[in-house]
Amino acid sequence: MINKICPSLRDAVSPIADGASIMIGGFGEAGVPMQLMQALLEHGSRDLTIISNNSGTFDRGIAALILARQVSKVICSHPRPPNSEVFAAAYRAGQVALEVVPQGTLAERIRAGGAGLGPFFTPTGYGTPLAEGKQTCVIDDIGYVLEQPLRADFALVRGHLGDRWGNLTYRFAARNFNPVMSSAARHTIAQVDQIVELGAIAPEHVMTPGIFVKTVVLAKDPQ
Image (cartoon, rainbow, N blue to C red; front, top):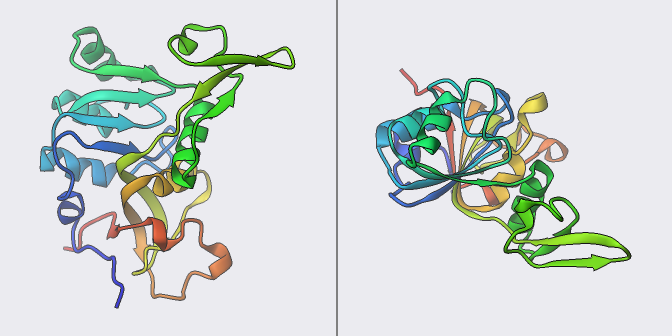
C-alpha cells in the first residue's frame, strides 16, 4: 500500500544531507513552507544551495538558514526584498554566493527541468550582465540568451490538502512556485494544512500529482 505520510517534520527532512540543492516554494509570504524550513534548521544540514523566489526576510525561513551558516549559495530572482538584511550582510561578508535569475526565466528553467527538457532561448537578459558567459543569438532581429534547465535534490513545498499518495492542492496564491518545483526535484517534501482520505481530492482538483511527491507531512506535528 502506497503511503507517503511522514509522522513528523523532523523525520520528513532527515534525508537532506550536507551539500544538497533545495528548491523552496513560495512567493512573498504566500505558500512558504516555514515549518519544514524550521525543521531543516534544527536538522543542521550545511553547504546548502537554495533555489527560491527570494533570499528570505527577517530572521526566519531562508534567512534563518543563512544566519545559521547552513547556506553556501542562493539562486533567486529577488535577492533584496524588504527586510532582507540577513542575506545582505552574509553576501557582503562573502559567506554566501548569489546567482540572480529573472523571475520568468527562473520559473521556465524549473519547468524545463521538471519536464525533462533541455536548454531554451529567451530574450530576457539579452545584452545585460546576466547574459555574460552564456550562448546568445539573434533571430529575426531579436536577441536571445540560452538558459539551462534547473533541477534540485530536494523541494520543500507547502500544500493545502494532501493524501497518502502525495496528491496535493494549494490555496489561492500559495500555489505560485510550488507545483513546478515539485516536478523538478528528485525528492519533494510537502507540508500540508490537512491530510485527507484517498479520493477526497477530486481528480480534476489535483494540482500536483502524487507521482512528483515523496513525502507528505502535517504543517504542525501532532501533539
